[in-house]
Amino acid sequence: MAAIAIATYAWAAPAGNAAAAADLPSEQFLAEQGLTIVGPMQAAGGLKAWAAYREQQPIPIYRLPDGKHWVIGTVIDAQGKDVNAKTLQAAVQKPMGQQIWGDLERSHWIGDGRPDAAHIAYVFTDPNCPYCNQLWREARPWVQSGQLQLRHILVAVLRPSSEGKAAAILGAKSPEQALAGHAQAYADAQGKNPDTLGIAALPRIPLSARDALANNVSLMTAMGLRATPASIWKNAQGQVQTRTGMPPGLLEEMLGKPAGK
Image 1 (tube, rainbow, N blue to C red):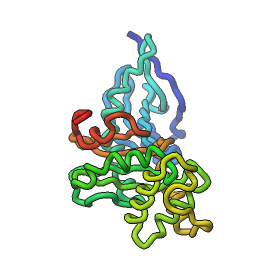
Image 2: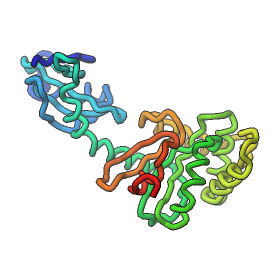
Image 3: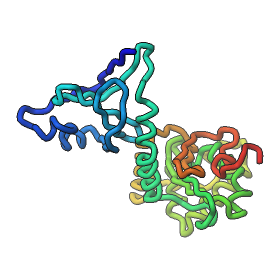
Image 4: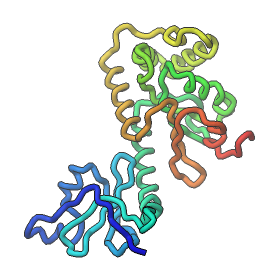
């Protein structure tokens, strides 16, 4: 069965650049493309291949038989199937997960629950997000029992008052208590104007809070997440899992439990 390379970007080695022609494109090119190289991978189709990723997107690099040209793209068979998709995903899953987890750990997050909880989940949270509040409410039994710690990464993406509310929480003497108080007040006042729920929005946003929120949104965007809540945790095998919204059984998934248990 024939395999066809569908190029999304082709690169030729500069004349006389023997080192680049013998291996990968230049480090400068890879850096300009934002590519992180994982390493060589076995690939169908007869081309030498490397697994890479960019902003949590797996990217394959194929060297053409002349050893002087490369293709970044997809190799398909006669039926249009990506013949290397599974191999590529398996190669990048662990390093991408490690990078994601490290970026989350270094982010500006607010803890909800015991730091020694058996399970940890990071959650991109907008103060005006009803589903974020639903997640907070439904997580109470597991958070309060010490099984789960939620680490909220505040973002302001839903309403004009989101930034002021998030800034008020971040700037509080105890952000943890401010977040809990906001979430409880939001839960107790269902059905009202969202802008009036929970903590009062700051009319003027401190530069430190503005920068923290901008960095959080940038991190969320880099991870390809477009909605709140966006939850990230590790499963029993240590693999990073991501869900957006409040799908059924989300908390059970975080805890590694069968749905409904």
